[in-house]
Image (tube, rainbow, N blue to C red):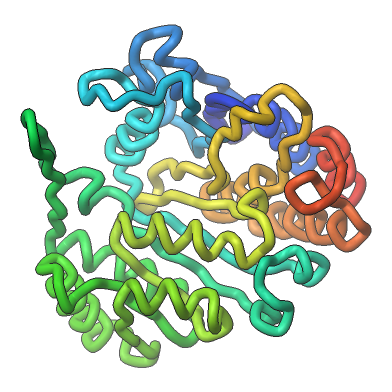
Length: 342
């Protein structure tokens, strides 16, 4: 039976890059795609970013593939107004997707596209593991006439499970990022990660690094890192910073995973880029690499995943450059270049 994949094209360039991903997936396997309305498009159609029907479809799927959500059309400071991002947060929470994996591997053909010098980024290969369902993004919040508050909350169990994901993924070292010199939840984070390391993963090196220093080291010495594990907001910021090591955020995929056997969510790191939506200029490569992560982590098809990743590398080595990489290739041309290398 064909694996069932719920596809969420979303907003902005989302439908365009989703078309690219489906073309590539059709070439490496047989899948049943179930397209659903999500994000801003769902707000327009149903008044909410995530309907109950879409959530149920995602729960029963083998994997969920998301393109992008959001845009200025739905930007508002009204706390009662629906926002596209609420759909994404709700989906992560409802599916129990607590671990976000963002690999960062600058491609040799694009070393000179990075804002950092070649000798700084050469040989970098790191993974950011971001806790996804706790912290400021999900804690109690509120506002009155002249103040607002957001609460950062973490439990021992939440920190333990994300620490295990990081240690399991590491080859040699885990860098745990916190702000333990100031924030109480960071002190708990550091204590729990240390306990998990000493009791379960003594053969993996562990270092603790304050988040401000980690931000500096990511651009000063990225080769230092193997796996970075961080709470929700710190991981969000650091993974976007790390994305620029590759030269473009248009190259970064991600996977959001929960308990074994539950469907994962796979999406590019970049946003919906409404300024170029409909122009055919979007870089689809992060979307294609997200599909590869889905093949590997969501559908247990590592050979097919490696084929897609290799095809992307070879297309870039052969000179493929979209506008964000200093070239002129369209979305369709980039897709054809990858397909030609599969």
